[in-house]
Image 1 (cartoon, rainbow, N blue to C red):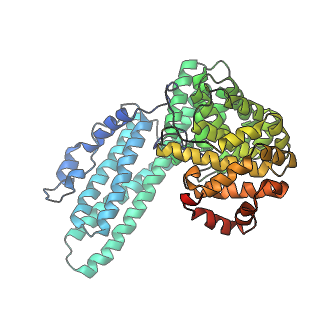
Image 2: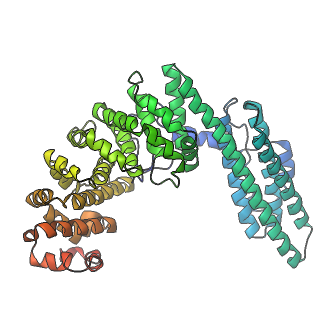
Image 3: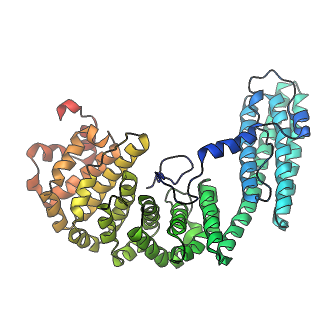
Length: 490
């Protein structure tokens, strides 16, 4: 899918050019905020956790200063959570190296950070639930236990005793990490739920806009936040935004971006998306409409990315798209440079076509809209800038175009049209010339499969040497032959 390029951004969806309102997390601003995490903090932490030391890594300690803006519990949790997670990982590393002085000093500092997170969150949030209170208590008990046991280790010189104590420290650290993860999950779920309720309850367009932007920013923090948004039915509240034309195009595009993130097939969860099925028809209809009316390439990209992910999520979405004439909408958009002007966007379009092509009716719609010619063009997708992200996107476009062609060529009419348009020649070129496919094995396999499917319907389109090398042998043998080819042989 959507292996979208770039760090915190949408997986496989870079956001080029002019940004939709609130869609970009300014990297410089983020860096400036993170600088706060590298400065010195509470007196107790400085006195107890930073002994005079000549160790080369002592200057790299993470000590949070200042913290997030007051009254922002979500940012507080994310920043403190990042620091504590980093400290836990680093303590584990020092423990593996038997650097007991560092383990102890970092354990004391970890206790400071955990205590600060609990007290700061209590100050800005509503009264905690009983479950959160219990987990907070367990977390602080384990922090104290870790500090105490690591301090005792400093006094022990016997290697055998230290070895047994190391196992105890490791177990305590593991339990501490579990309690911390549980507490962070409960707190983040609570805050995200409040954000979703705020969107649901708001009748103010500007409040909805800004809150949707906040929700989108959270999805860029990674899979755990996407899972939480799905768990609290955040996608369902976005359905109302997508289907309400009173909201601006930018707000609906951001809602589409959240849907794209939460429904990503790369995320390791689906159990919380079952309620999504209730509103899937409304969401799919709204997304197709957004694609059709998009005023910019970015809006089209976000809407089509959400649709692409939904087609992975449930095949019923493909049937809905057929009924909504999605093939016509998508193919028409390909000739509009204002909406479709990058390989990233074509990646979303061909993903949708590939997933829809499993349906028999799709073939006739593709022929009717001259879609085979468009797919043929995607087999020749080339990067303009040569950046790794764009090269990877072009590879995905070529691979999925070949997969789509292979599936559609089960229909003899599609196969004959593909042969008429010289698709077989292009597939052979992609198989035999590594530079044409950027030496991509995935593209090679897809092209071999498509070529074999076409050859089964129209074998007369192949020369004897191509048939003997690319079609007649086992797929793995043809793959090995083509993957080892030198350019001079072509």
